Length: 88
Image (cartoon, rainbow, N blue to C red; front, side, top):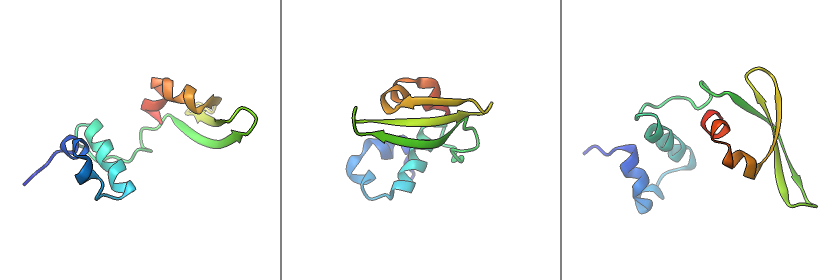
C-alpha cells in the first residue's frame, strides 16, 4: 500500500509515530513534488546566530544571504516574509 506525503501529513495520529527528522523529510517531500532533497542544497539564506532579548521578549535571527549580506529579523518578521521562508 502506497501513501503520499500529503496523506501522511493529513493524519495526525499516524504522523505522531514518526521522528522529527522523518517529519521534516515528509514535509519536504509534500512540498516538492514528493522528491526527497536536502533542504540545504537550494538554500538562499544561512542562519548565523539567534539571540533572545529579555526586555522585549523577542527572538532575533541574524541571517546571511547567498551574496554574503547580513540580515537581522525577528521571528515574527521571518514568519511573515515568504521569500525567506521559501528559501531557508
